[in-house]
Image (tube, rainbow, N blue to C red):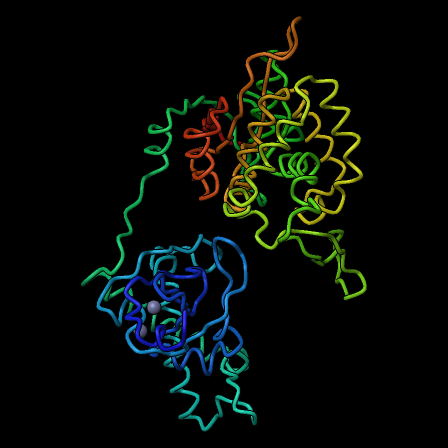
Length: 432
Ligand SMILES: [Zn+2]
Ligand SMILES: [Zn+2]
C-alpha cells in the first residue's frame, strides 16, 4: 500500500497486537499500519521508551514495528469502547480480581500520578538524552511509588463498585468439572498440623507422623494399595516427550522461519554470554500459527512415527541425544523427565502419544501446562489397561488457571480419561 493510501485510511478495523503488553499497539486490518494511541504518550515517552516502538505479536511471537506512533483516537477508550478483558494470572501480591482485571489501568494510572509527584519533587523524568527514566525512578523511590499504587487500587476498586468496566464473573471449579463430566473420587485423611509449607497427611487412625506425605503421594499410595500402578506426572514428562519426538519437525532445516536462537543454560546459576546454548528454532515456535504454517510437514512427521511399541521406543531412545537442546529450551532436560516421558509411551501406547503430540503442536505455549499430578493404570496379564489421569486436590485447594484450561481442552479435544481426587481433612494430629 502506498503512503498516501495509508494516510487516507480511517483505521476502522483495529485489533490489539499483544494484549499482555502494558502499552497496547493496534494493527489496522485495512492498511496494516501499527499504531499506538496518543493518550499513552506519557507512558510511551517516560515509562516504556524501549517498548514504545515495537511489539511482539501474541499469536506468532514475531516482532512488529510501530509505524504510526501516538495517533489520536486509536485505543478502545478514546473510541468510546470498553476494551476486552485480559485478566492477568493470579500471582503473589496481585491475587485480587481488581488487580487481575485492572492491571493495565493500575499500572498506567500509578505512573501518571508518580510522574506528577516526581515533577513536584523537582526530579527529572528523562535522562540528558531525553529518554524516559520513570521505571528507574520508581525503583529508587519505591515507597512513594507503592503508596501511590495503593491509592490507585483503592480508587479503581471504588470506581468498579459504582460502575464496573469488566465483568468479574467466571465459572467456578465445580461448574467446569461438571461441564467437562469429570468424576471426583473422595479420600479421607488425617492432616498433620501445623503445616510446614505444604499439606502433609497420614492415613486415618495412624499416629505415625514420620510417614506423613503430600496429598499427591497419599493418593498414589492408596491407589497402589488397591492394586493399581501409579506414576507421578505433572507437565514436564510431556515436555520431554514433545521435544524428543518432535525436534525433527520443529527444527526442520526446510523451515524458512528457522533461525539461530540462544538461551541461558538450564542447570542453574548465573549465565554469561559464553554459557548461552545455541540451537535452531522457528520464530513462531509454539504458537498456533507455527502449526498452521507447517501443517503439511506436521502431518508428514506424525505419519512417519511408528505405530508399533518396540519401534516407537527405539526411536525415542535414538532421538534422545538429538533432542537434547530442544529439551533444554523447554526446561525438560532432567534425566527423570526423559525417563518419565519414555514411560508415558509404554503406558499410553503410540496412538495416544501421537494424539498428545498433535495437541501440543497445535498450540504449545497455550497447552504445555496444567497436566495432571498422576497417571494410574492396571497392569494385567494383557498389559496396560484402564488408564486414568488424576489431579489431586486437598479439600480447600482451587484449580489453577492452567489446570482449568487443561481440563476444558482435554474434554474438547484430547479426551484422555481423567478424574479429580479430593483429599478431605477428617482428622487432625498435632506435630510434637
Ligand atoms: Zn488503516
Ligand atoms: Zn487512547
